[in-house]
Length: 291
Image (cartoon, rainbow, N blue to C red; front, side, top):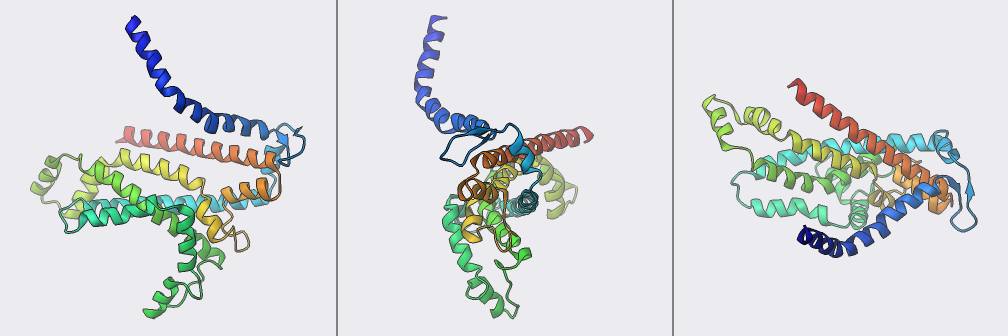
């Protein structure tokens, strides 16, 4: 008993630096942001308690609904795109193909690339007049696309960058999960005369269902908080067509100086993410019961 207590004390002593840093940089700011969301504050002067007024004003503001809609569209596009492409790439690279180590590394590189830096590069690549993407389209006799200057195409543009950033992560996770699928399942499918597509559809995809749920939740959480590359690529333009919630919150807090309102927006974003995650878990559980 004494040895167990001593071991616990030693463990907490070793953990204490990490716990202190986590509390200082995460827990305390989260609690403080909740406090600020109930205040009217410009970031410098005295704070004034306004209760739930900031939250009420959020749902009266049409700019918030515009940002929410754009964020939802972006999240759906990035989540679906990165999941579909990630599982296809993982399936292809799970075989004995020449250069698979190189391709795995190449596809994973965007994950460890600084998002802001990648956004700047993509901004120049998608430039409507001088960008390399439109030059390539012209080379193969296709018309230029107004990537960053048209309300429809700008959402596609930022979503493409989000998918590009996430594909490698999804691919690696899927690769790891695929390598744990029993080979006997594929052997049985071969005996039954299943094609490659049928084996992928009826063996690989169902076995990867828990992994897919995990990746969907992670992608949803990450995409719903998007800010970096959208800020450097478009700053919310044109005409607010790419004004995601992260940009909306940043502008309210640091450009307009409405820190209390911005803090309330951050908590609304958290509530949306929390509810969506719970719904995804419930749907997955219900689907498992139906099977």
